[in-house]
Length: 242
Ligand SMILES: C[S@@+](CC[C@H](N)C(=O)[O-])C[C@H]1O[C@@H](n2cnc3c(N)ncnc32)[C@H](O)[C@@H]1O
Image (cartoon, rainbow, N blue to C red; front, side, top):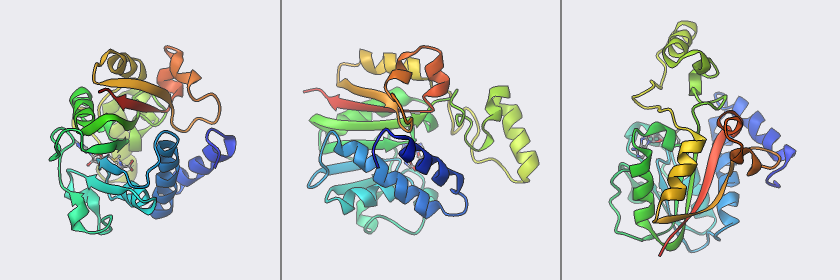
């Protein structure tokens, strides 16, 4: 699907709406879409790709399908499910802050929707940069806090306050929310993150865009204030400096 385009955004949006009923189709579609985005900058065939915080491995499987040597790093065994990418050898239970990898081994370091779940995103990015070879690519995307989806399962009520939103969610569903602000979900902004990556000496910023937006996805990230709401999900493409 052409990216950006209304057709693609609509297809992804519809898929998200059916995430509860059919997660496999949603994540397969999302993984294909993300792999297409990576391949705009780096062909995957034959490359070493590390998927950090990759959950149950849909992205890793898609990278492998395209000929990459891809490895899943996931700290929570509960997220892995029973469908590991190719077998346990290619799946590592490891924290993104401290990857069991030598410097510069990866052609591509990939992380989808993880940064908002870590307390120290700067250290997380440093580790992604460390394991990427000079000239290699870093794909990092996250849902920013003031995005309509910033509160995750309790969105959009997070605009009224995180605790109130979580309590409302639990009251209405009768089960505990997966996320709690300050524990496994953090307020992360588009502006502060862009300033941070621009100030880094280990990476160059190649592209900053809304991951799903159908028109002018780069433009929205350039408008202070508006970008915190409208970006929805920020996608950064970084290049590891020599
Ligand atoms: C919303 S899920 C995203 C899963 C998958 N990447 C995707 O886009 O569908 C967030 C993932 O981040 C992982 N995570 C949380 N803290 C992490 C850390 N410090 N290092 C690596 N992964 C982490 C969680 O275990 C979870 O699998």
